[in-house]
Length: 263
Figure (cartoon, helix red, strand yellow):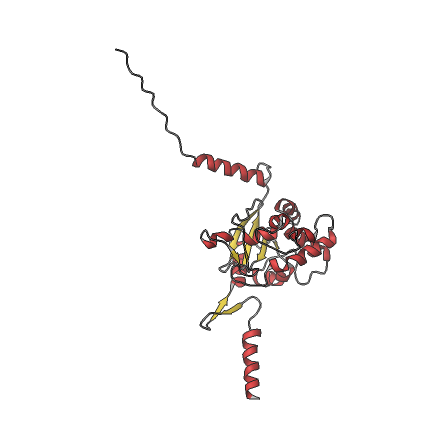
């Protein structure tokens, strides 16, 4: 009986005592590591964004963002309107240029995603993504189709074999943006999916990285305001990149023409 009580106490303290915003892991030597990325990110939101900033995230994190960051969200754990939840699903499932007008229409200032690929945290948004797609498809079946996010063989992949629709989605881009930089030129690996990422990582045009937590679990992106010249952000970025390349190009030295004098 005593052994049973001790076992129950150990299980309770190790498996059920950590709140969902504070994660814990064990090192090879048995030492406990506290992973505090959620509180870190919510504190950053609270201290570095205007009080009226609207955050778009999956509904799971709505109460946490409202309570700990004190910021309004597009949907939360109490959202009963399926269309509102589907709207967030559509944002995450769409390419940037299609998601941007929806974000602007709903006055969204920041997009927050949960990514566990670096640490091996399996409760991330990539693992929930198909539910977002399915809910969005229920409202917009002509625009969002679940089958488009699978490979031709019907596999859910994030590596080179992932479908073009998957790679272009806001969820994929915001999860893996700059991820390859952590591997020093080596092959980036998602430790949850156990898949190697493409060498060329995603780029962003309509969103810009605002904050990434210590272990990359929480990633926050700022929604760009309209371009002051009225240009599409993709065109504006391409123009800016062209100017940078032009400035960086080394100037060629003029050859001096030597003319020999006639005797």
